[in-house]
Image (cartoon, rainbow, N blue to C red; front, side, top):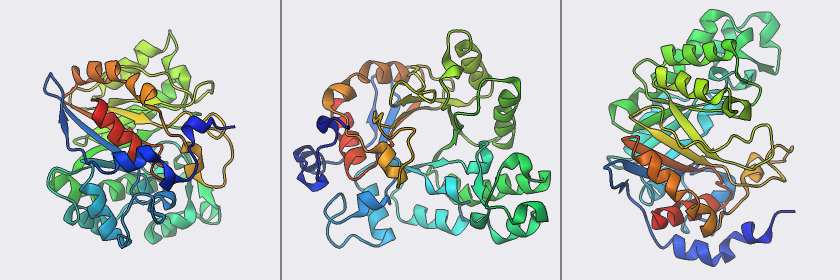
Length: 329
């Protein structure tokens, strides 16, 4: 069972949420000069857009929601790009609907990080380029695709982000590798290939297998990222699983460090759930957030910018914890 302390029941009844959402947070400046941006990993999750949870009455249209969110936080992570390749016109609208200085971190598409994609969600022109043996499958992996289709996936993804980059609103591309991407020469090559394809783009890497950080492998992992100017994503996640990566307070790229907070819900982390957001249904208490202060301060001394992203974006849990973290800092 989920500890009642971390699942307080009806979202709108949370006194902590009511207090937190009377505030807003801008970019913070660490003592060493690093900018700290705090936000959540979605502004459109169905549990977050439900009436009375985060958005005021009447704020229901996509444009209004993004404008409201961007008036409360300085950054957000986009998760939808993992499931479907983004469109340039959508990125242009995001620019129009957010103020100067607002930052978007963009999750890489599944096919860019060794994960499968639903064929039906690929653009029409890419589906047409698939060989017959793949076009009738429900899901495909990048390793199955012809080289020219793999290249087209990367090209389409990056082309769509040009409006964000040109407007100064693109933070980083998040490369989240699944737990079956284990330490090996082949998977190091996979990461190095991503770096080549992302030449000129800022990127961050999140691992989902703890073997990358055992005593023998950890120095090699950090060296791999440093040599490729890739930012390590430091994580807080449920303990006790193969995918439970330890928190590592290292900035492997001077430009940026990233921390993602997934919650600590051990009941749902690797379980089959009806909705993905149930995996992140966890509200940190203040003591748990405060545990991170020394590491955040250490990271901010190593990087010019730090992104703190609350991926426990079930209802108002992520937004509440994001604002509380800002208060602690």
